[in-house]
Length: 183
Image (cartoon, rainbow, N blue to C red; front, side, top):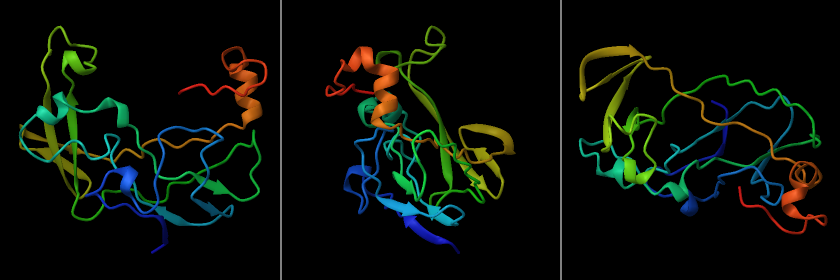
């Protein structure tokens, strides 16, 4: 088993983890671990809502999800020797749910809290819980449906250098680049 470089406790929000993650790529966010090119390691992650959605039949958590704390990311991870502008190849060797947490969800977000592209047809919150059984998934909320439920790897990206941010967003940041844009 590869070394776990970023471990999460699913009972705690990302802000209370031993290693606190992040929610955007920015040069002012320091790396929490570093790796060498070619290293094989394990990263544990929380779901994009930071655990706000529960494995139950009540859609109120979808209706009330706090969208200001979403898209939590594990890391940042520094790749030793990488320079701004480098293209990094990341091979995902294995992916899956953490033991004891083998489920996911589909949510229809309420019109008054973000909504979706079909809010005129589905204005209220709803959810379906999907239980993973090997590579398959099934839902008690959608009977007689079973399919290969391959886990989504989430987001992987590279933080830009301050120089690249200034090039791209200099008109927003000002000439000095000393102001910070909120992303």
